[in-house]
Length: 487
Image 1 (cartoon, helix red, strand yellow):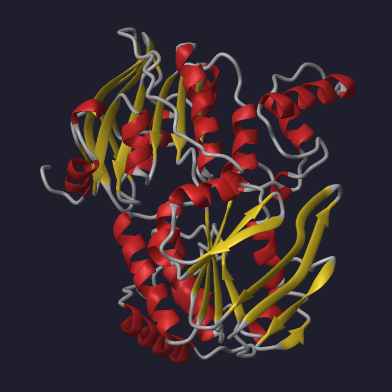
Image 2 (tube, rainbow, N blue to C red):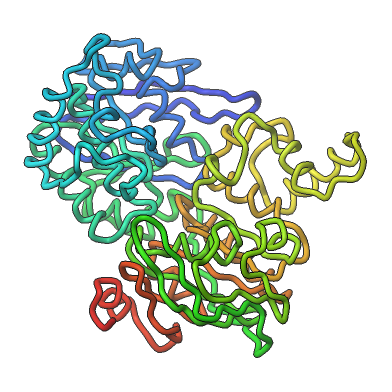
């Protein structure tokens, strides 16, 4: 299906999110859409997929003007969107999620849905149990489920918004193979990303947005420097490696064991020092999340000890971990870190120690203005958090952290962020290290783990390696361990 966006404008209050964008996408291609966080990529695609309506402009599909007023409208016209955070229902089974949106009346035909799912799985090499619960799937499998659902509903244009965030290298390879196969079958694929290497590897053509405007289009062979300049208006270089690790022990784990219904982590002994950064590498679902949550007091270990300095925290409630200066920042910003519907001001007020029953509005306004300035948040005090871009949501989460902090536990801290935002985030995190905070973080990006960590732990199916000095390993060696070789 040929897609044409003509002179698209979209305002959110004073913010001109899309400023006169005109873009033509022929069928059978993988179209890359690049841009920094807040450039207007997701807004443009949400207009095409019916989540937003343009204030001005037209959408043409196969040369005919169409009016798309809802996601249901979009799918009727053959346009489906896979969002950065899958829009599924985790407590439900896979087959029931597949049926969502399908016009089957009060008694949907599950047998027909399962047959369709089996055909799609055979076509793309997927392997998902139709009767499994969605909350037991990895992020990559949830993406596969959403792709199958959209195809079954009749999508001929597939939009993917930052689809490689939080998935393993193997899952990414499978996703890319699926997208290439779809394009070869005549589908139009729009790949929204900020990751240059992925766009260069996958896409037949690329359009670049900056500050709401289309600033350029290009085709292979791509020049990375040219793409970076179009994205940011300048060349962006990663910062030099800095280390603030001391010999002062901070968080101490002794023979820590964690269990859930899928895996067991046995006998982990580790000492995190003041100013140190420890990176956790491994395929999604290998135990990194459970490890971080145990260190934060969110889940309780089945054996072993947790100490902060000489203070024993084993078995203590989450609040005592918080009061001891241990904070966990989840990857699911809107699901676990922020509260949709509340403004930036309300978040900053809630994050502060409460004195009295009445909020001092003048103090709250001053606090919000200061945090917005200090953390370069592109938003207004009255902006709801769900209206912010992913990068600005992450900045808001960091702006809510209290001072001082002893231990900061981060799950994918630069998930979905462009190069410049990721460098900025790590600059703020390294400031914390300089002040004596110890950091443990997990990431799907091995380059990020190598660049910012002092030591690295590799997870494989619940097994945990001995700490590895980041300066004495490589992406290739970590990849071997992540694949289970060397354990």
